[in-house]
Length: 163
Picture 1 (cartoon, helix red, strand yellow):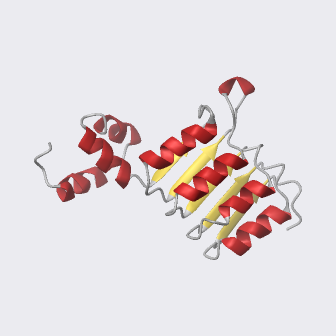
Picture 2 (cartoon, rainbow, N blue to C red):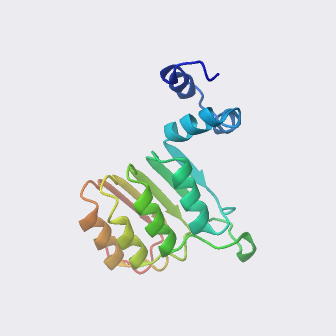
């Protein structure tokens, strides 16, 4: 496998669509692990993300070219570990420079200061917030001002906003 040109390996990886297959393939060799990590453009993370800030930092290091990220804490209970918080968003926004599309669902520990961190994501085009009870219009304004490429802002159950 190491004798194949990297361009051929990348082209092969593009044809694999199932995440489970990509995960399995990345276990074959260190080279495939690195190439697959650089090629992955989207991830979806659920409530099993323990110690969210550390895990998110690891995910950003493993997948440096993420363009689409969905974080969903629906069904989360305290026994699942810590939720993503403002500090996690700071880590995330500083390490995912290619981010275009972000969905945050049931991330109850994120507030306006966390959204202000997202203002550093200059390439962000779409932001979806689903059930973000601590977010107000102040945080939304920070995103709108900082993310100059923002085209779509989807708000579902953002109680304190006056948009």
